Structure formats: C-alpha cells, structure tokens
Image 1: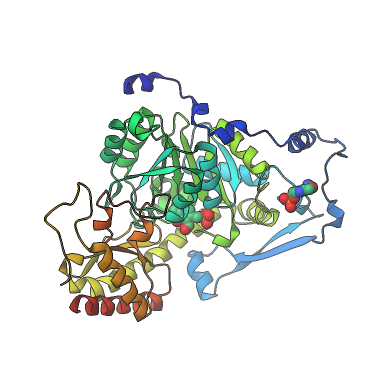
Image 2: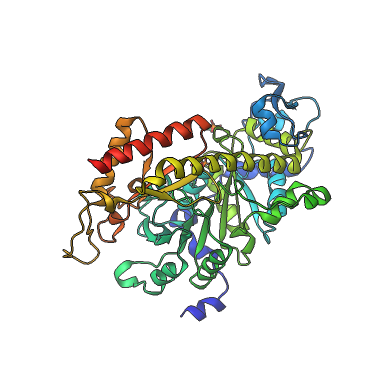
Length: 496
Ligand code: PMP
Ligand code: PLP
C-alpha cells in the first residue's frame, strides 16, 4: 500500500478539516480585493475610515545601525551608530502609513510578503510556495490545526514538546501521538514504526500531520541532522503526511563556519544560507510542508509577527481563515518591517548581518552556561547536559537513580506502566529548587497529556521525566547565580 501511495498525486484537499472545507470566503473582502487590483477604482463600498482622519502622520523607530562590524555588541555597549526607521502617511517611504493603517488582506501587505518571500528564496529556495503573515508562530499553529484537524484526528509530535501549543489542539479534538526522541531529536525509525503498525480499526484515522520543532526543539534543545530531516521527509512522502515545521529558533545557530570570503563576495544572506540547517521547506518538492517562521526570537516577541510558507492551496484556505478572524497583523508592525527590510532600513542583508551577530552573542551565553554548568553542576555527577547547537534551551538530565529514595520495581503491574518513582522525585526537586529561589521547567510540563490533562501512564514517559529545561538567554549574572543555586539545591536534595 505504501508504494501505491508513492505513485499517487498529492491530494491536498484530503488533508483539510471539515471546518476548512466549510469555510466561505469573506464576501466583503472578496469585493474589496477586486477594488485593490484595479487602479483608479472609486471604492464607495467598504467601511474603511478615511486616511486623512488617522491621528498619525509619521512613525520613527531608532534602531542600531548594521554598519558596525559586530552590531549586537555595539548596541549592547551603547557605542554603535543608530539609525531612524521612518514611515510616513503622506511622504514617500517603502510602505505608506495610509496603506499600513488601512484594512488589508489576511495574507498581509504585499511589501512585507515580498520582502519575506525574498528572504525565504535566498535561504530555503522553496519551489512554488506562498508567504502569508501571521501574528507569530502560536497564531499560525492554532490556525494550521483548524485548517488540518478534525475531532478524532491523530497528529504526530515529539514526545516532549511545546505543550502550550500541543494543548491548544486538544479542545479541537485532536489527539497527539508522541514519537520517541534521543539526544538528536525525533527518531525517524520510531515514526516509521508508529505509521507502519497503525491499525485504523483500533486507533482511528492514521495520522496525516506531523508537528515538529526542528531547531532547538522546545524543550530538549536538540537540532535535527540533515540526514534525519531527509528520512522524516521521505516518511512524510511515503505516508502522505503534512509537516508543520515550527521553526522560531532557526536563525539562532551556533558554531557556524561562516566564510568571510563569501560575505565579501556575496553578502551575509548567502554566507548564512550556506551554513544554516536545511529546512523541511527547502526539500519540499511535493508541497506538504507548512513552515512557520517568527520574528519573536530574533527581533522581539511583542512584535507578534511571523510568516507561514506553504503551497498555494493551503495558503488560500489559511488566508480565508485570517480574513474572517484576526483580519491581518497590525499595520504598525508591518510598516516597521517594510522599512527595516526594504526602504532606508537594514535591507535583507543587513538583517542577516544582525542575525549573525545575534548568533555570536547567544553562542557566548551558551558557552558561558555550559562552562559554569560543568564547573558547578556536572562535577557532582548528579546532572549532565548536551551542548545545544541552536536556540535557547539546555535539557538537563538529572541522574535521579543516584537518589537514596529512588525505587525501581522489578515486577511490572502491566506492560508499559511506570516502574520507577522518577516523577515523584522530580516533583520534589522542582519544589526544592523553587524554595531555593530558582525556577527550571520540569520535563513533565512538556510531556503529551490526554484530554483530561493527565500524562498517560502507558508509555514509560513518567520514568523518563528526569530532565529540566533551562535557558541561557539571561545575563552572565543570571547564569552564574542560577547555576550555583541549582548545584546547591541538587546536592542538598540528593543528600537528604
Ligand atoms: N464587527 C462589525 C459590525 C464591523 O463593522 C467590523 C468592521 N467592519 C468588524 C466587526 C471588524 O472590526 P475590526 O476591524 O475591529 O476587526
Ligand atoms: N513554537 C515554539 C516551539 C516556541 O518555542 C514558541 C515560543 O516560545 C512559539 C512557537 C511561539 O512563538 P511566537 O512568539 O512566534 O508565537
């Protein structure tokens, strides 16, 4: 049956939810769109406030200049040049505030979409994909669930994942099917095992969506290798699965071998594109990837701006949902991005220079974190951690079996049931650290839960929650002080 699937033309409509199939276009927006494309059309149809009555004529943002050799360091030190990013309502600029502050299309304004499509082209070179704006990846994800998921559907995900977003799918009746992970992320052979052994009479419809966080997987911090990505894409092709590639940490990669000669000859975008990981989008020859990018981690989370890149069929459905709900991202953010990436701002290459400088600073913080961790924590033998290659997280393994009250039962109550008291001990440790004045996110927070909010006890996951997610984005003092508290708390806990 798998070989038959391989030969079949990809039927994207089979992936749509009942809701997405039933959705009608916003009829007013449909007429509005016609008025937009015919220049000179007098629009007496729409209830749009007149731009002369907007109480804004100019917007200025002071941003660092990217002419500095290391703009993030110059900005932090307050020594670097600055520049003003300006948008006007009645003066020439990349995106007039007249347009930015008016109602727009759900996909976002053309100026911003064009800039992001160019960025995409230069980084991922995706064949035949569309860009739609979102209010960040959280917004995009919840919209994608509604686009693809029906009550009773099962979606695949990593066994520890960003529960804020997987929980958001539960009220839609979507069930999560966790795929086993190791230190390098999702294990393709486990994904294959789940799909190959799926029994539709017992388990319902076979999963047709994979939700994955390929870089700095939240919470485990792992980054999928090129080989695993290829294997996962091939499985998705074989079993006709849509990949939701939630990649907010993509641009934050460390230990990159950026070639100065490439920067000099072709600029930062090319030099970065050469060393950034290959995204699922970049290998998407049959249009099954919905890639979600966000400005949250590279500009600021309060921007609430991101972009979805996917096939034109899904893009149209997604835009219809946005047209009938949030309408489009706010105009001020779109105006800022237009001027920053186009206009008189950084341009795409300057933006990538900022990103590469940001990578260096976060890499410094990661290295500091790992140095202090080895010195203060790992030396005790009570915890260990892999050095993350990207993003913001370190997944700290607690050697819980060294605790005097650790218990492992030899006799299994039932197959798959927890056999250790790991979950209880980790709960105690979390509280102990809290008493010491430190918060780290316990692994149990990221385990897949059922509709009632409980972690299913039939998969050994509660025996494997001996991890904390910690972040290294803080200042040097936060890293030093936090890890010292952690080391002390751990030692007290294990001696108790
Ligand atoms: N409700 C009504 C009755 C409206 O007329 C409009 C705007 N035309 C909206 C909602 C949408 O408003 P908003 O721009 O705040 O999303
Ligand atoms: N997805 C993942 C994996 C995240 O870690 C986050 C933020 O923490 C988000 C989505 C939300 O991103 P946004 O701010 O773009 O909505």
